[in-house]
Image (tube, rainbow over all chains, first blue to last red; front, top):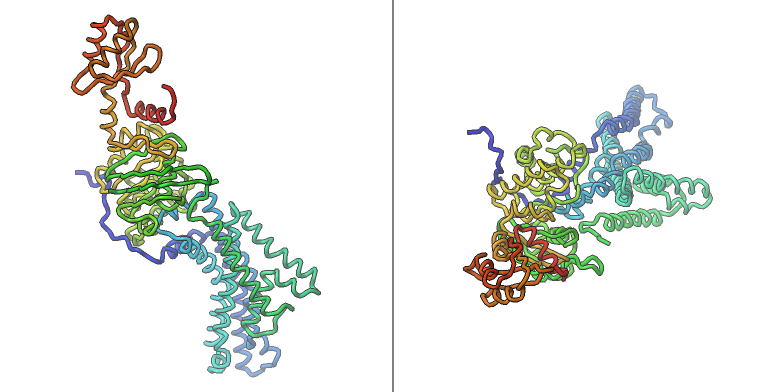
Length: 282
Length: 308
């Protein structure tokens, strides 16, 4: 008798009617995105975190020897330390979004993989949520996660609970600001990925979308409203709003909220139009 | 009953790809046969919800495709004609991914992925990236991802296309084996008649979105086995009249060539006797339809209204 019969074998397992098919897509996508290039990018993005951690450590030492001046205190004690950190990480968030998100849907369109996904019990929302999680997870890894770790370090290194009792809300501000940035950036990059049929085009579209309004904002610096068209300006303004610090741009909070909501809505509309669970045959 | 269609219609704009189809496909292996553009792939895609249907209703294993689409897609395996692979994944990763998407646990999906890749003959190449596969290997991995969750119904869309003769042979053997050993029904869409003859119990011939033949493969052959192509010279009308008097159907095909369908219980001796009795000179006497291919061509031509 052969040790292995190459004939077809039935399978008597149980198929779960899982609501979390999106998680399977997310998990596989996160693994697929884990490449050498991404690892390098993550290593670079972690440098500001180490700088911040050293600052916090040195600050605690300075505090110990009692030579605290208002200037030194301003470096790390202030809310703006975490706000500045997140603002600085925006650059890495953009790079990570391009690196992990530009090809997510574009590659599937190019390889006609929609047929693979949607012939299985996968809905539009499962697919989009799964793809969104991939970019979002890596995005959070370079924004929210290090900022939260810095906050925890700061809490642990403090001599008493005064920092935590005075600034406990910072935890939620960090979480809120980074989640908002990640959601917005991921939505936009996925929308561009859905429009393009290859990774490079999607990346160029996304980069142009970020850079062009920024250039316009600088040219028309005397017209504050132009900033509303710049995604990075909008997100920095939103972060300032969440941290309750001086907003960097002249446009109103209502304009900022409206513009971000419009961008999210437009991205969703593009995704709905381009990620078709049914084929469109002309 | 694995598939039940009622007045099922698929439109692409003004073009009707599947034309008011009413069809009942029993369990077993059914070949969906038709030339390119007959509506085979459109029908399968519409059943899976990959193409919107415009009219009628369809049930798969008793489940309405309109309301139970997600559940149906869990029960069904689909091997598409297109190269819909996920680049970056290895062969085993791709099949495991398909299994997990269908609701298998990670561990079970991985075990089963190895098993089906063994079955389709990709055991050596299972750790290679799918984009590096040849077209034949891609066909095999597509079959493996359709089989991983042991579906109750398997849709195969041109499974042997792009394969070399040996690979094609192996693919067909595999389909026969799956049909024998598995407990699934199979709907095989192809334009290659030999594939259907080889693998299917039943054949549905489609043309221009309509069904032109729906019966068992052996019945199709049998129904045409009593028809002979006859070529006669001299006393042709007497010869034909004689045969018609004996209950035969005589159809004028071309110059002196007639298709003679004999009545039940008779054989070619009747034609020979007719020729002898009328003095007609019999130049040719061969079975009119020899294979499913002949039936296919005949039915397509009949549907096209062509003179043959």
